[in-house]
Length: 268
Image 1 (cartoon, one colour):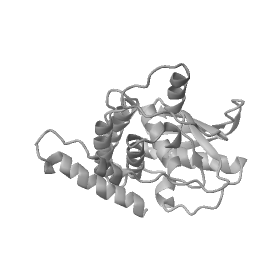
Image 2 (tube, rainbow, N blue to C red; image 1 turned 180 degrees about the horizontal axis):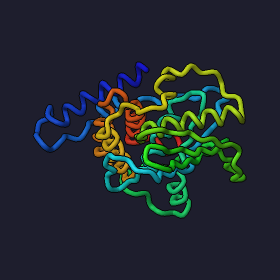
Image 3 (cartoon, helix red, strand yellow; image 1 turned 90 degrees about the vertical axis):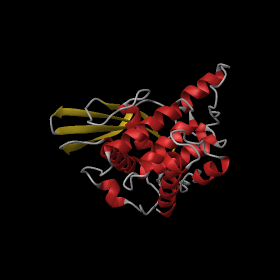
Image 4 (tube, rainbow, N blue to C red; image 1 turned 30 degrees about the horizontal axis):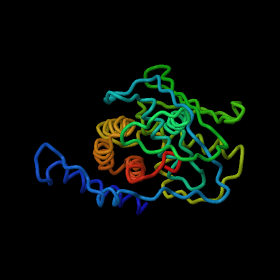
């Protein structure tokens, strides 16, 4: 928790500087390497014996009142929120696949990497893959179907459903999917013991408390990061991390800094 609070504090200071504390108004100065290094929080280290999990696909068919910026989708945004929720855990070894797989295939075919794109690196094997879908059945009622898949055979090894009454924001949905994944993994294997520092936050079924504008900022950051536009991604994640209830933004900001400073997709 201290590391997450430190990221949010640094993010708020950097956001203040970008919005008015810099030398020019309306043209935020790019972050220096020193500022990027301050944002490069280490990725949580998985405990010995932690099962490896990746996010295969998240489909969102319901509506959301907030704005989804161009260049991304709500499905990708929720997938990244699930990624952040799994990355922070030490009892699960999260493995990146959404951007690694096409990057590794492009490298195999000898195609040049896009400008500023990090190398794919060498990925680890995966025990389980997650696929999820959110369906809004009627106004005020919806459900999330979450499945755990054997990545080698494609066989579904377990599934569960999360029901929602009332409006569902993307952060609540992402956290509910993470909670369901942990439940499904528990049914298939033994996780190492780990004390979750945020169980009340992660297990809450109601609204997350995260403002819609913060979610929109995170979605804009995801879109920028997918284009390897580091400065735009940094500003978006920092704006989102200014919301004290939005710990996922700080996690993704740390990942962005690690990639920007020489990391690989497989390691982050």
